[in-house]
Image: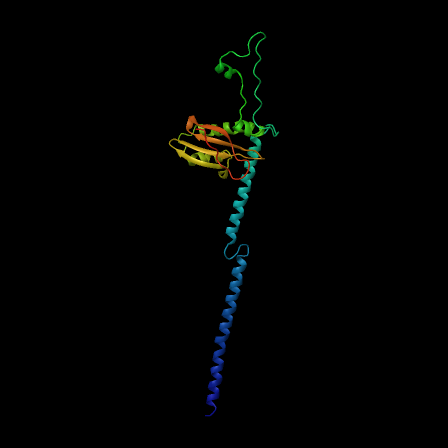
Length: 226
């Protein structure tokens, strides 16, 4: 009968071993599961999954394509335009010479002003280079044509048309509606130029005019004349 405690002690020790083995096995399974989870997200990170990283790459690629298309459109608008650095439009023709024996002036200042061309001293004619001056007419025409048939020129509709023409959102500024008219500026600076356009979308009364942007730095809308 004295051997009974020893037997009980041996049984007690043997019954603890399966529990210990089970605990060790559970820890190993959890460790392997954790490793598998980390590997499955290797393309991203715990805070930035792979699908989010892929979406960012896709957006960056789309942005690069849009920038390239915009630059190509600007080059197309300036195709065959002068490339010199001279500012302003072509030099206006000289005043016609009076026939021999007749006075050069009619004596009426108003009439003389209509006949004699006056060179501008400020504005796009002076501040834009020859390339931008040439390209500005093409931008004005295509933008105006795109907006003429717009019956209800809301900012959203005007933006869509400008986007369809290839003008990027980041280049469209001060797009605001006032009554039945939506006004905007477009920054068209490229290759050291200062070109921008000032637009007023109002159906058949749409007006698009060239303007001058700052030479460097962020785009600042110029003061409107009207």
